[in-house]
Each structure stands twice: as C-alpha cells, then as structure tokens.
View 1: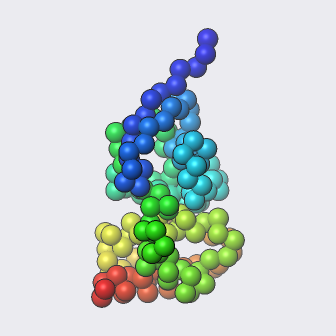
View 2 (view 1 turned 180 degrees about the vertical axis):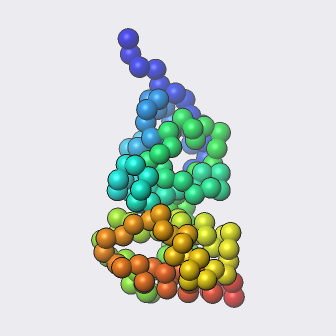
Length: 160
C-alpha cells in the first residue's frame, strides 16, 4: 500500500506555500528538497548544532526536529527571508564586516537565532548574546567575531 502524503499550506518568508510531504519528513527536508530553500543546513539531525535554525510562528526552532506537517497553518521564516532584495539585514552586514564567518555551514542558523534575540532583546549584553547563541555550534570561528557582530548590529538597529 502506498504511503499517503499530507497536503500542507503554510507561509514561508511571507509567501503562501503549499506542498505535499510524507509523515516522517522534517521541515528541514521540505525546505531544502521541495522548496529549494537551501540556506538552512543539516549539521547534526538531532537539534544539537543549530545550523537548521528557523522561526516557526516567531519561535526559534531546529527545523530538523519539526515535522513538515507541523508547519500546516503556521508561519516559517528562514535565512532567505532576512535580506530584502540586495539590501542585507544589519546582522548580515555586520557578520561580513567583522569577518564572523568561515566555512559558512553554521552562519544561517546563527543569523536567524541572532535576529530572534534582537527582536526580543534589542540591547543585549555580551553574556546574553553568548547564552542565546549557545545552541548554535561553530567549528571554525571561535565565536568571538560572531558575538561582536551581533552586539554591533544591535547598536546599529537601535540607533537607526
């Protein structure tokens, strides 16, 4: 007997999206393989690294731990929704300015998580940034440049 697929209607980065998925497919699998939004990466598949971080109804989640069917009727924001055309989000600009990236696998997750932080806490301390980003792992940068970039972006976003 063939597996039945689920029809999912959701919003991704502000656009209405429909897709069919199998019951066991993760949101990350559908974002990457069906919707061709490949910014979110699978680093671990167990929610430990944060490389697949997305926002689901305004809540930071690991897309590898969310079933795609759970997105039905909800709003998803990915790294692809951060920039507006050629205009980078202040966090993206600051990551570039501070050279807060190397291989790039973890950076989309860090950017989504940092954006979530600054939306909740526009004036975080260094400790708060480090705590908030603790769920995102990087094997290349040593974190300091990432933290500096987030703090610098916070200042820019507050002062306009």
